[in-house]
Each structure stands twice: as C-alpha cells, then as structure tokens.
Image (cartoon, rainbow, N blue to C red):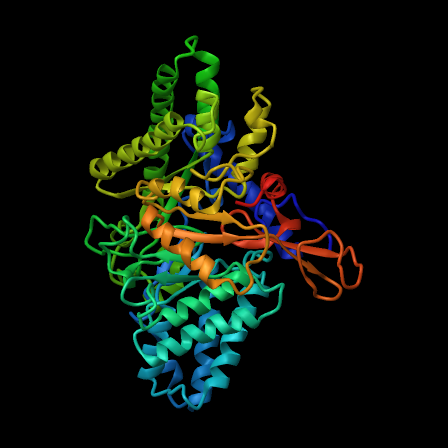
Amino acid sequence: MEKQNKNDNAANRKSYVGKVYNMGEQQIKSFILNSLNPEWARIHKEGYIHIHDLDAYGLTYNCLTFDILNAFPYKKFEGLNEVEKIISAFDFIKELIAKMGNEQSGGMSFANFDNDFATIFTHMNVEYENKKDIFAASIRSLIMFCNNIHTRMGQTSYYVTFNIGLANNDFARFLAFTLLDEFYKSGSLVYKPNIVFKVHKGVSRNIKDSNYDLLEKALLCTAKKMIPTYLLCDCEADKNTDPAKLSIMGCRTRVVDDLFGKQGAIGRGNIDNISINLPRLALEVVRDCKSNDIYERYSRLKENWTHIAELTTDILLDRFEKTCNSDKNLFSTNLEYKLWCEDFNINELKEIFKHGTLSIGFIGLTETIEILTGKKYWKDEEAYRLALDFVKFMRMYVDLQKNKYHLNFSLLATSGELISGRFAEIDKQLFECDSLKKDYYTNSFHIDVDSKIPAYKKIQYEGPFHIYANGGCITYVELAEAPLGNAVGLDELVEIAIESGVHYLGFNFPKDVCADCGTTGTFDYCSECGSHNITRIRRVSGYLEIQDFFTSGKMNESKNRRAN
C-alpha cells in the first residue's frame, strides 16, 4: 500500500476525481480567504484559528442528525414483497448517505437506528422473524458500504454514525443486535461506520434492564473492534434530556439545547465551527509578559483569548448569514426528504438553520497550562483548577454570545485531525518550547497521550470538562491491547465515566493486521507468516482509520501514545 500520510483528511484515498477536486478546493479556499475581512483571514493564515471546511463557507452547513421518520418515502416501496422491501430500504439508506455526503460538509447521524427502522419496516408490513437472514445480509452490505466506499469528492468515505441502544420492542432489539453482530463478525479491516451505544438507566445500563444484553454485546464488540463508542445518557450534562433525542454526529458533535424550541439533536446539526489555537496564545503571553506570576499570565491568557474569540464570533456570524442566503436548490435531498426539523420547501433557510449550532472550538489545553505554569494539569492541583476554570471561562463567553445574538452558540472540544499538526508546525517556526518538540497538540482538553495514568483516573480528570463543552467532546482511554472478551472490565469503566460526568466515551487500543494472512494483534511483523506488510488501525481524531493515511500531527501523536 502506498503511503499517503500528507493528507488533510485520513479518510482520503487517491483518485483522478479527488485530485481534480483538491485542485479546485485550494483555489476556492484561497478565493474565500481573500474575500474575507483581512483581519479574519490573517488570524486563520497565521494559525491563531482554523476555519473548518473553508471551501464550504457560505454554501452549506456542517453536520446533521436525520429526522428520518418525518418524510420517509414509503411510496417508493409500494408493490414490493417483503424481501424486496428489506433490500430496497437498506439501498435507500446508502443512497441517502451518498446524496447527503455531497450536500453538507460534515458527518451525518441516525439518532435511533434500531427504533426508527423497526417503525419503518412495521409500517411497511415487514416482519423480521422469518427474514432474519435477509436483514443480516442487508445490514452487512450497509456496513461494507460505509467502510469501503470513498466516493465523496472522489476520495473520501462518508462520516456516518448509527446510534442504538434504546430499542423498545423485539423488532428494534433484533436490528440493534444484528448491527452489532454483523460488525463484530466483519473482517479485521472493517472499522466503519461509527456505531454509538446509548447507555441509559432503566433501559440498558443495569443488569435488570431490558437491553442490558445489548450493552454486553456492544462491549464485547468494542473489546474486539473499538466500536461502538458510548453515549452516556445519565451523565450530568445529559440526564435531563430525553435520551431518544440525543445523538452523536461526526466524531463528537453534540446538539441539544435550542433557543427556538426544538430540543435535542433530531433534525438539527452544526452549521459551522472554528477552532482556536490555545497554545499559541499561551506562548505569546510568556513571551510578552515580564512577570513570572502565574495568575498574571493567566489573566493575560483570558484577555488574548477573548480578543481572538470576538473575531471568531464575527466570522461565525458572517458565515451563518451567507449560508442562510445560499441557493436553496443546493439542498435537493433535504427538499425531498425533509431531514431537518423545518421543511426546506416552505421555510427560508434562516428559519431552518437558526436551529443549528455555531461552535467555537479549542485544542491544546494541556500544552497551554504547561506553558503558563510549567506543570502538567493532571499532575498538579492548582494547574488542574486553572485548566477547568479556563474551559468554564470559554463556555461563559459562548453563552454570552448566545444571548447577545439569539443564536445557538456552543463550545466545541475539537478533535483536530489537521490542526493538531498545522498549529504546532506554525508555532514551531516562531517559538522554542518543550511542548512543541513532539510536533502536535493534544485534542481538546485531553490529558497527554503519553501520560500513562490509569484509565479510571484519566476518566475522572477529564469528566468535569464535559459539562462545559456543550458543542461536543469525548474522553478516550488507551488500552495496551484488545481486551478480548472483557465486557465486565469495560462496563466498570463506563460506570466510572457516568459518575465522573463523561458525556461520550471511547476505548482505544493498537490494532495491527497482517495484510497477507489476516492475523491481528500488535506487532511489527506477522508472527504467523513473517510478513512485514502490516496495516495499522488507530483512533486518534474520532474515527478509526488506517495509520498510513494520517496527517503528520496525528501520525506523531499515534506513535507517542502509551497505555493508560
């Protein structure tokens, strides 16, 4: 396999169409930057911020959780027998994914795949008892589509998340189990789509709950494949929201509160997001502040961040207005299937997109605190207090913007596939600092990936940050190897995470696959056939990907990871 670790996106694969797209994309990005306020363009170019999906600026929104039941096209399936309806319905899902992948810039989600499609098939008079093999084959085909297809923009896979776990009848339970089972049985090189299991007391959390067996199945699948990840509906941030309305989009996007009455994620998404380079601001504080007093430095950091955040807010508002003035015909799939909470056919775009979120993101909190204080925030009580206080401070600013502009501003704990390396590379040209030697910045508020602290402690340290990052966040723990069969151990960590305030939880471990004989494990050469043709699958930014395709920053981070 040819190495492609210079990609902007680890999901990209080379193709003629992709190459042509990339050439045009760069031209469009340059054009858009040159058309923006010069100060906005400067802070993007100089690495103070990163305007995500710049090529989509003013044309489309970012991500969406489909309101799949709102206008499901039942007429398409009239006259078909049961088998034909099953196959055609799953073909429709693939078609919908492909169409929406070119209608928006980011991820897409099914909030309750199990319950919603049980409802759909029941409405079409399809029963599952005597058609289990057909359902299994169709779900297997859907998994392979999500894993293997790289046709978006001629090069990229589709970012799809299936949320399950709240199944409320036998049909829904069957669909959830089959999705997990087919993914579990799929090959070692099958690592998509993203599956999220909702853990909720009274439904799937405890041994007496009706869906606890599904949680056990999910945990066994995770122990082998790193998927599913877990949406913890009983955590502090989500416990007062109907879990059926919760959904993960992309690798971590969270959409819940709405100033306009559409509570929850269904039919809503993120409109746009911009990430701020926190370590840059800390490096400038240390350079410019003559005092060594930590609290004076911290006060300066808040001032510097506020200045950049105000400019970021202006950019988000500009992009929102331009997106609302976009050509409605660019959203043909939404016009047909009414996947947003408001109908594109009868509403102006602003009336639709006002239900979405505008997110200010951040990356590199751990490096920022270390630059200011000389200490790792997870090793020092005062440094930890400052770290938590700063995230709270950012959230307070975001809430002020929400009230000021009457739009759904939120704080995003950014994963930063591209920017973890881009920001560090720029800053390394300007500053000398130990935090820059590893050539990447750490995701969001995460503890350093080489900390080696126990998994439960990492969860307990990161948990309190989740309630402030209302635009999305995740906590990962890194395991030394696949915990095959150890559902109990993972379940214990799920419980610790819920009690610690974690909203969304994932489990990582190194997974190497011999491309010649299929042996899996952790190795530099295959113990079975001796081959050095090894494919390494890792999760660094949210989605699992083959390490060879990582961006430079994520490649460096992956190599630096140590087990918790």
